[in-house]
Length: 323
Image (cartoon, rainbow, N blue to C red; front, side, top):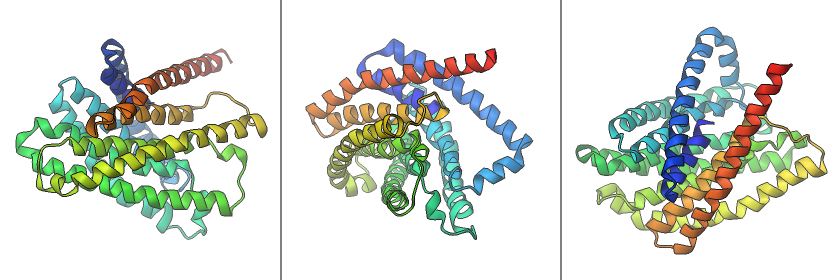
């Protein structure tokens, strides 16, 4: 929810819808604070359940949403000139990324005695990629505003982007094998599979921001490579959208899975918003007007999806209260 609201806020700002952007950014900050408090409470009051989630490879990678949500909020605040607050959030997110990046795969996958863990690979695994690329986005966004730390931010941005690219390949292989080798229920093809597209889109955003960074040894070494690869990634993200729409149609219309609100709807809003932002940033960085136009037009899709998800959440909450 934080990731989705935050990226739509950033996209609205790029689109010139500044009032909407400010409203959504404030809402993002409120959502973030509430979720941090609730998460800390859950860590204290339900430690057994938290430990069980960490050992469940179907759930464990959801912990990376904290990293991504923190960095999306940081990027949004940086866009409003709150660079110090954004820098603090980037530090928190980077530390969390390093800790979770080593501990979650080990606890949830490598340390388990049950095999095959491959049967549990799903769309949430791509949030691991999103977390890495969100660190790259945060570092690249803040790099122009901290003269003393430019080289360090450049190294962090390029390193996180590179790690994210490799992780995407790995996650794509695991999830593809899961879908092709093992039987699955249509209900398993849930909204988090849209993160497979969102992970590519945020890779484009991070790469475009790196291309625009000031001269630094690490950036200069990869600028040309990154500029070319992000075009390839944007094309792949575009190709994935009809595939994911078709999967949703097959799941609900053909196989009869009920279409009702679930919190994972936000897993669709975030990729849609990120795709719009990716188009606008890439169009600017690589001087591709048609890509920038597509990104600007796609913002209408992202905002509409956010309204539907938010409305569905309110309606679902009201229905539960009535019951």
